[in-house]
Image (tube, rainbow, N blue to C red; front, side, top):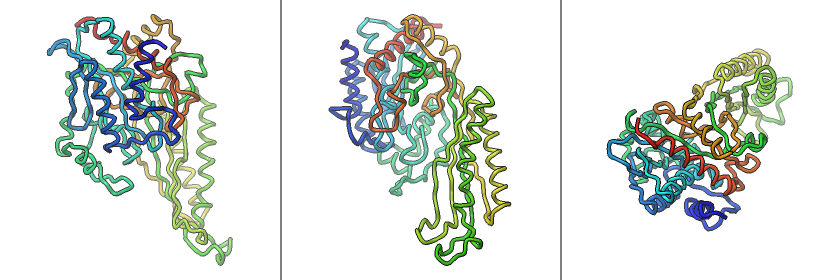
Length: 417
C-alpha cells in the first residue's frame, strides 16, 4: 500500500468516527446533530495537521484554506460528511477526504500554488432528517430561503431553525454564509458514483456533464373509507385500488420513453401513505410520491403531463377524486465544460480511462454551479450500492481520485490570470 493510500485509509476512519469501515449498522450522522459536529471536528483536526487555516461560517460549513496571497483568487474543493440513517461511510466523505489528500500530495511535492485553495466541508447535505437537502451549500451560493424552511420539522418535531441553533449557530445570520461571486473562482466536488456506469464501461473515473434535478409529484386519491367486511364490492370507493394502476403506468411510461430517445429518464413511485391504514377499513385516501429525473427537462415535463392525464382518466372511471400537486420542479444543472476539459486532460495525463456521464443524484455542486464554474468527478463504488451500510469504494479508487484532483489543482492554481 502506498503512502497516500495509508493516509486515506487512516483518515477515512477518522472522518467516520470509527475504527473499522465494515460496520453492520452503517453510519448515522444526520444534519446538524452532535454526530455531524464530531465529524466536522475530525475534518478540522486533519486540516490543521496539513497546516491549513480553518474557520466555520454562519451556516456551519467548515472551510480549510491554503493561502497563497490575500488578494489571489480562491479555487475550492469539497463535499459533506453528514449521512442518511444507517448509511455508508463514503457518500460525501470521499469528496472531503480526497480534497484534503490532494493538498497533502501537493505539499509533499513542495508545490507552491499561485492561487488560494479552499476545502469546504458543507453542512447538512442530506435530506434524511428534514426532507430539505444541501442547506450548507445553498447558504453559500445564496439559494437558501431561510423563511421558507425555518419551521420544517424532523420526525421528533425539531425545526431546522432549532437544530441550527443547537449546533451553536444563529439562524438570523445563516444567510451571511453567502459568498460573493468574486470570492471564489471555481468549485470541484468528488463523489462516489452511486451507480454502475463507470464499472460497466471499464473506466477509472467519471467526468460529469450535468445533474438531473427532479420533478416530484404528490398524487392524492380521495375515495371513501368503509368497513371491509360489510361493504359490497360494487358499492366501494377504494382509493388504493383505484390509484394502484398508476404505479405500473409510471414504470411502463418511463421504459417506453427511454426506448424512444437516447437521454435517459428515470421515474419512481417512491412513497405511499394510506389512510386510515387499518386492516378492516377500506382505504379512503392514498398519497403517492413520484420522483422523475433526467438531464433533459422536457422529458421530465412530458412524463409529468402523461401522469396527470392518466390520473384524470382514473378519476373519470372510478368513484374517486385525484389531485396532482407538484412539490418540486427544478431545472437540471449543467456543469462547466471548461472544467470538464481540464479533468479530461488530467485523466489522459495520468493514463486513466474516463467516462463522460450525467448524475442522477443531487449534490452540493448543483448549488455551487449556479454561481461559479463548477465540476463533479465520480469514482466507482462497488456494485453501485450507496445509502447502505455496505457502501464501498476501494482505497485504490480513492487514490486515483486524489491524484486527479491534485493534478487539476496544478492546472487551476499554477498561474494567475
